[in-house]
Length: 383
Image (tube, rainbow, N blue to C red; front, side):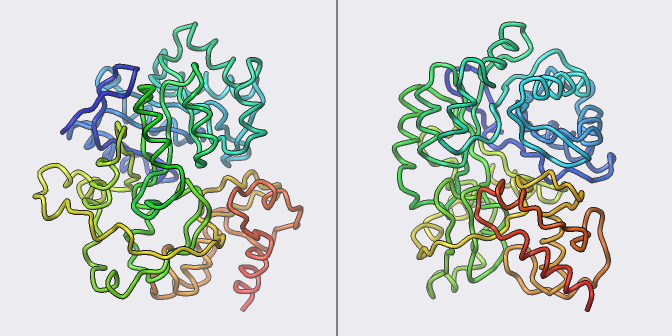
């Protein structure tokens, strides 16, 4: 394992760390197995933003007896309502769920406490107000419940503001080869390096889509850190398709200036092993030159299953519903053709319950017409 310094925090973090979003709604045995395998392989930094009690209890069990060996990153403003993810700026609610984090993870503090998912100028102003989330985070820091304060965002302009703030020690931002041409990224990375801000790279596989084998990739700000885009592989890139691997994706990210660690999501030990193959891989396997400058860009929105549109008053898991629709129609996430999975109803997948209130459309940061998607899913189920 290779370790890097997380900016001015002075914390030594594994170069390849772990995002945990793909471990939600899985059996405890698998969750515990993946986390403990990661710790045994030298991973010591874990990003933990889900607030669902079952997820936190599984994670608490996985880290039990290992707290001194790991660094835990919590998210202030990520909460749960009716078993669904929700973003909040309500200080009482944010504080309640952070205290719940400490209790369920059986710890007295978070190593990094992120101000969660802030992209727009208006939200930034609210979050960074002394009486907003940053003030609450500073209070927890003073109480010894948070060692350092981080900021997670998907937009360059907002990230640059956060990096210039005296309150922010760590920035979490999407970095992948698919976003290589996003305007302003180089200036952002340089600003992090100049101010000694720890840079945590999320979405190194562009939400898994770089590994999908699709000819055309529909990518969002959530993936890229820039405008939504449709990226179409060139003929040359099509011939090199089989060469897009987790090792090359991670090599690209870790070669970017200022990056302290990258947090790929892994839902099982096989995917974890594929990421950790980066260490010890020969130069030829790490060569990411074929990943860069192989796309042309066209702006277009598409669901990426992030569920930032929740909570839904009808308790629909919108991301799971759209994912199930694409799978059932023979299109796997990322665009690969696959065998239809049938019309079985998965948990939270009930598009006919949609009341078309429009709350999801207003919350979606990627311009997805969620109502139209629910109508399409409902029609498909009735066929």
